Image (cartoon, rainbow, N blue to C red):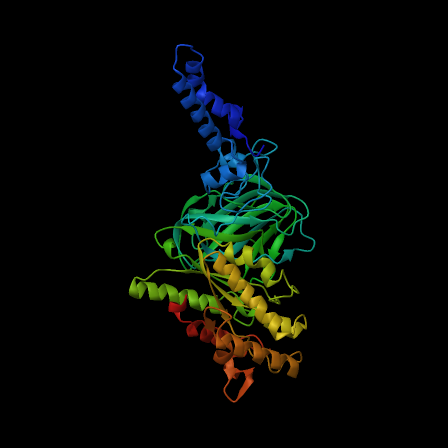
Length: 486
């Protein structure tokens, strides 16, 4: 099947396509009056056509590129689905170069999501992430039909939009029945239905994800959007969104209802990404791969006062003052996450491709990981931590992505922050500052620590738990970053 071209009129193998293409020449050859040189030329033409048409589906997918398919009409839909290295397991024609699912559902009106999922970061197709939520785990007890209204905050505007729906941690298919997009400021006027290769309803296989069709939609920068999903089946979620979203249980579709939802939730469900295209998207995005300090624990919930929010605001203002290149900022923080240990969510190396290099338009990655490895006891060897950091840099370089890193934050005052932990933390920080680890350093240790007690957070920057910054601390971190380093 990987070598089959699909069309509404039937299925043609590559050999038959070549045969049809050269049939006139064959007829010429069959006439005895034709010279021998013409027969030789014809054989050469046949060989060239076969070499072009017959290669494997993977080669066809690569040649076609990203996002060209629409169900049965797509050459890429019949290929290996890896046009940009994004989707696997598509030998039966179930993937496209963009990895967005196909229109080949088992029943009319129902599409099929991609098993391996897309690689939105590849392809240079003008898409840039404006918001991201790193998937953490499967929601316990999830599965019943419900409508979820995720409230997401953009960092870059655009004139077209698409979302990613994930079933990464699902053990059964996700029945995605309806998804909509609207601005929070005017939901009734802006509410639009999203489709997936022309289908409003799709099935996303276990471990898979689906990217919606491009939607003409004016996405404002620094604004809240509603991404509503009516679905049944396993729930891949980010349980600590530090903001308020909404949900309504039951088998009634409320995705297109612009009215208020009674139920509130502090988690993001199903949706992991919102990407945009527009005049500002050429600059690409900055992705921050981090733990709860990146996630924003300790900041005012619902106020968008994480240090990544501060950085995004600075970059927008810098652009307006200097007409410089814009950059979106994507927060891939997971509370409790480790560099080498996966106590909460997959470890840094395990999720680096999906949560960082795979993001749309990624140009730079900032790594803020390592302190939880020390505090949890998962890894307290400085050399192992530094080797893990260098490995992420190497993987970034292989994709042409710049990788910066932070020092490890002060933790003095925590019971788990023992003398051994402090010694390793200081060793790791000294190596990071000395060069040879990351391409650039964001020294959150020096930014946040108390001048007279460098093992501890400065009191104005301490949220109260001796590890997570306050609003003022997060603002200090965001303000300390040199935009030129990005």
